[in-house]
Amino acid sequence: MISWDVYMIFALAAMALWAIGAVAAFRHDERCSRWSLWAMVAGIVVYAVFIGGLWTSLQRPPLRTLGETRLWYSLFMMVAALIVYIRWRYRWIQLFSLIVAAVFICINILNPEIHDQSLMPALQSAWFVPHVTVYIFSYSVFGCAFLLAVGGLWRHSGKYLATTDQLVNIGMSLLTFGMVSGCIWAKQAWGSYWTWDPKETWAAATWCAYLVYIHRRSCRVKTSSCHDVLSYLILIIGFLLLQMCWWGVNLLPSASSSLHSY
Image (cartoon, rainbow, N blue to C red):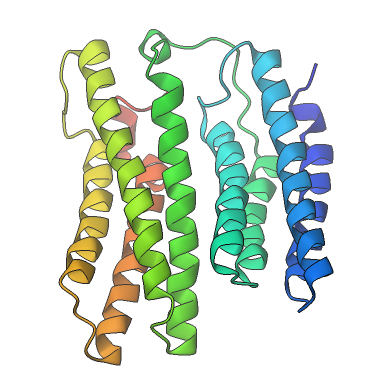
């Protein structure tokens, strides 16, 4: 049975493979490009095996605690980076995505937040797995958009905006599904679709931030470099709001009364 006791072994093996893939991606060689893809896929498989094994060991989806959601975010961050690399061939995206994933992996190594196997009644719903996994995958897509926004600001270039447009559209679709499914789930569990719980409030703020970006880009406001800067800044603000929604809200005094505190 796979447990948190062997997490470091799987995590280090996956990160080593991802590092190989990230380095190989910088080589302007078709053979290295193939090695990069295979190394990235191998790392994803290794990490996914741990998550699957932990799921079996816990006899429940490992999605209850922040530590468990960090598992999925690390995995999905690298999946999203791989998709971006295959689609747009940004050679640096794998390295910087690995840095982001490594931060969450290191937090989990130091503080895995192990809980018992049971799920409270509110979590025993058919919406539990799709709601949380779709949300976390949307976070990873927005994570790649955030990296591209930072890259665009660093290079004073608007060339990444077309890519971030597509990523934000995908992420927004997933985020919207997550919010709608959460509303349906909340109605079943607590009798109300929306209560302006602290986490729900920050979720709404995050959704609105990315909606502002989509609206701005749909208006085709691309006449000067300063407009590119503002679009990138909106993406960065959206990602910061996302982090607040995901885990930052737990640091607020109001978190103790939140319906989302498990």
